[in-house]
Amino acid sequence: MEKGGSKGGAKRGKRKSGETPPGDTRDTRDDGTPAEPGRVVAHHGVAVLVRFDAGGERQIWLTPDQRAVAGDRVLVRGDRLVVEEAHGVLRRRDARGRERTIATNLDLLGIVVAPEPREPPGYIDRGFVIARAAGIEPMIIVNKTDLEGGPELAERLEEIYGPSATVLRVCAETGEGVEAIAAALSGGRLGALVGPSGVGKSSLLNALVEDLDLVVSELNRRSQKGRHTTTTATLHSLAGGGILVDTAGFKDFIAVDVETVEVAAFFPGFETALESECRFRDCLHRSEPECPVLAAVAAGEISERRHRAYLALLDEIAEPSRRR
Image (cartoon, rainbow, N blue to C red; front, side, top):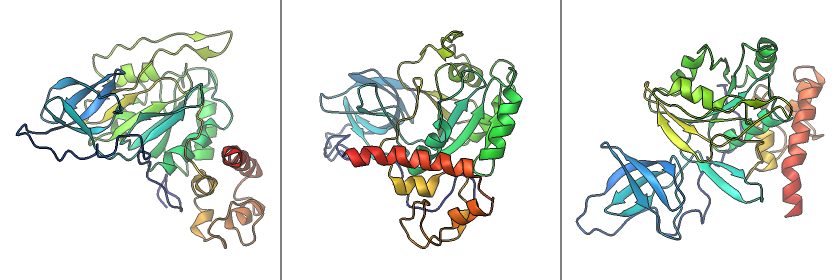
């Protein structure tokens, strides 16, 4: 089975109904003005910056009921913007619990971690499931490998996640391994880097994008947290043809629109076991009979620790559903 793959029906991360106004995905009006295809590269509240396929960029004002985010494919006719249907949608909840779409049409999600500050418990597993449920390929990027504990962290994550996805060792300060990120995005693929503040996402972007000079804040040694230096998602073109989204710091992934059956289908490390069919299509690998995941745990092929991590994420995802 290919890395990043698993059984189960992904929703492909399409934009939720209501996120764009009805009828806004196709422009049937024709006043003689040619429609220019392009992509939203930055969002500025009441307007977006569109980079056109034919070249050039222009700011387009949004109507009061219109929504567009970085990554959206659009058609521009005059001063009218039409948002096309999107896939690979990355969402998060803000501090008030409201759902926010960060970027669309993503092919790759780079989950950036570092020996300091360490990611919250379950961060990587949650990111994997969210990405796979949206039809986005996950990839782990271990930054700051020059720091104490960096090589050990990379080795441990390679052992856990190596069979499921690519694990890269990089150092933004020295440039080590950075070219591997660019290679993963070659051919026009669109990717995003996410990770807790302070792990070095802005430094990686500075190393990847020529003439880019993002503000990089120092890690607060007392709190072991970084200050948020990025406030809005922005697209940057790479020399090798890829596109990278600069996102605001993800203090933590809060799953949006993910179901328990998707956790069961997409949890990293279960791929080999799931090559055999579970007896029940909605099996959650808890205590169901004839479950290959439980059989793999009993045989020592999946560690009990990884199964406990899975159950913790399963309960976390199930809790909002119970409340609803």
